[in-house]
Length: 80
Figure 1 (spheres, rainbow, N blue to C red):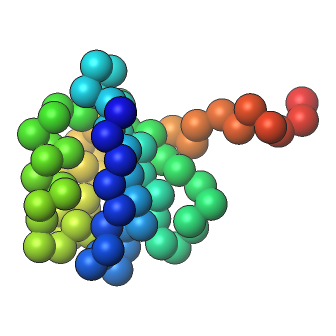
Figure 2 (figure 1 turned 90 degrees about the horizontal axis):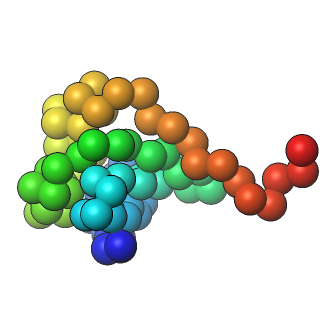
């Protein structure tokens, strides 16, 4: 699993990517306590997101509507 902090982004806070499962998890500055999972993301998309001049713009143009509805990961600490 690779972690990355989007220091220059106004939209994205941090993200992680697992190349074995193609799962990308993103945290947004607008809701930093909630992560969103995007499945089936190719490694080159993760690489390009990290290198983008505007990570938020790259996300909107290349990820947001391309990889299905984001899923909020289950919280193992939540009571059922």
